[in-house]
Length: 355
Image (tube, rainbow, N blue to C red; front, side, top):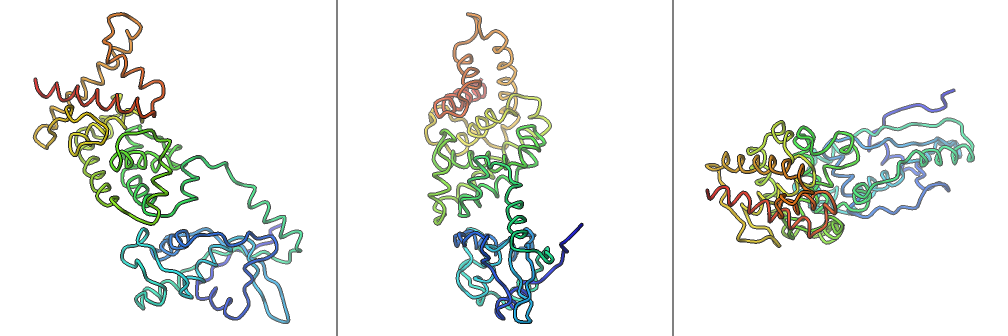
């Protein structure tokens, strides 16, 4: 038997309840408020952009003839909203450049009105004892899947690097999926953000293992530093990659393997800008006039990869190409393997263009 009902309330309703002492945010079974200002700012930006946020779960309790709403799930979301309305924090530039540094009171009047009229989905529980409420809360928190590395980073950080990496991932997720670099199922676990962050690190600080990516989330949490320029380079590199290989064309090559796409991305990045840690002698000129020749060289590389892979255990297998394949099979994300692959592939293309 259903003992809850779904309703919709505006933020102004929530503010009014709180002002009149009709909202209880911290019942005994709720967690303490632990959100950082960055996390709060991210939520406020979500609301300002008119995007949905998770439902709130409440129960109603009659106290001294007044109906008090007791929050079962969603305390931190409501507390962040109320804090913002009360001017307790500002919107971070990492989340919204237009309203960066603004408290609620400094927002344009129409934006304030839109914020207060934003509607929250609310499920109301009826006539439940403390024990039943505790049971509901525990059940809500039991339906969780263990977070992977990227999901943990998403839950931990809200700053500039996260926004930059996630923006890049979202802009090119269709290309990543349509090309076979990523799968739709992996994207549901934030694989596009993981890949974009990894590629962004190579622009910022050179080719390296993906094991240290959290440092960049941490270092660029409150300071955007060189990230705007790195994002511009990311977009330029992807525009060249997309012209060289459309999603359906790259799918038929070895470059659609995620670890080799990392190599391809850095080959193009090195040609355009130079990449820290890669041999400058391997750079080649890349412009709109020679894209077809670069494509032919990369196609040849992919074909040769398959040919050498078939004879890799034979003495006639080319030594360096054999090394490339071996470093594409084991320790694929190690710094040494990544540097070797990017240098070797860059030199291959450079030499083909010189013929």
